[in-house]
Length: 203
Length: 371
Image 1 (tube, each protein chain N blue to C red):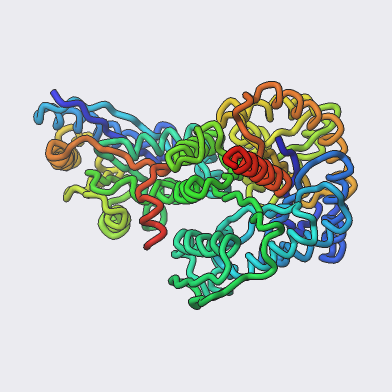
Image 2 (image 1 turned 30 degrees about the horizontal axis):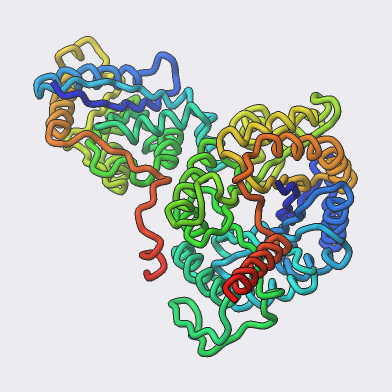
């Protein structure tokens, strides 16, 4: 069995949060889907609420405090990412975007990403397609075709085997398939020299 | 080991009095601070270069020459000289001139600058920051070592048979440090030439500085300038002291909370933990500074930022009294006791001249022996 890591970013603010609930369901489904490809997944959950001050401080000082630094390394080093945000005012939350803003610009290149969101009503569902998908496309991530949206309705009585469950299964299968095609992630070292001085001089 | 201070020349409102010094006042104060640095026994005064408000220091050689005229021993340096947007020909001329006027008490620290708009003001493009630093310094290096220079590059008019004047004092070019926070290319550049590498250190976690210095040391050895532990390393530091550490914290907090760069961000306690900033008693500063050696190895220059964020002149001079009176004498002794004999001091005009005279003597002896 191959071993891979999955980072799960959850940007919910309330506790308990439906965003975290969706993130947990997606992680569990991803573990099951990866298993069918003979891949064992280690999950690293990143709760952005706990890092909110660190994220603001990074924006102001230019460097991540220790806990945030670890979270950024977890994302950059992961073989796949599940990113879940609440929809605020027609888009991803500000905290979610601020976290993405402090990621290294190459951290997600060619990384399989599953995008997901929660909101009060299904009227916000296309925010996944017009806001999250282009954001991750810009970062050159490989966003799987199925994005998972959960409105309050979806947590109702028929959710256990309803349409939300179907979408979760489809999206995580797509993520597992992308994972199975790839070599393990090798995060770039910002301190590594990529060119010789002679090349720099003659450039 | 050299100890000193560096200033970025910011004109900042004192958050405790809401008073902002005038340019005239702040410029005079910085001269007073530099002279005081010599009086309290520090070795180095380094001045920043900026071309935008709220900074005054657009013309560092003018300021440094004025200070040189009023000091005896103080080594004058920069923090930093903009190798990207200045014409390297003008840097060669200005600093050679300063070297003559100051009797060789000059070195420089090269930097790329931290303000995007500065590049277009001088007809440059920030995206070419690294190539500008590489090419401009290559020319500067040549101008100080060769006469009748022929040159063609991408960023300035070609030169034919150009000799920059005055020549460096006794043909000993000013020693150069290259400063960078996180660009491995600049550590590589410093290593390639066997120049010094200065890590700003103060705005970033120690782990960054450690990585950059390790890379510089390794590449310094790669280019055949000596062993990794013989590379010439400088570090920034930032301290605020009072006899009683709680007094230091209480007095410095409003300046920290409103400081340019990191103000309105992390708490003083967070920033003290995450970066080399030390606010406390002189003994705490001694202990913390000695600890830098644990992650960068034996190093040659320690500069402290003492006068920013609107601190009034009186306070800065008191800080220098503590630094020169209580901290640096202990650090000198402790660092010297720890440093192995094969680790060199930072080169100066005087040490380079002495080394050359020694080499000449040795050469003459050989000639005699042959005859």
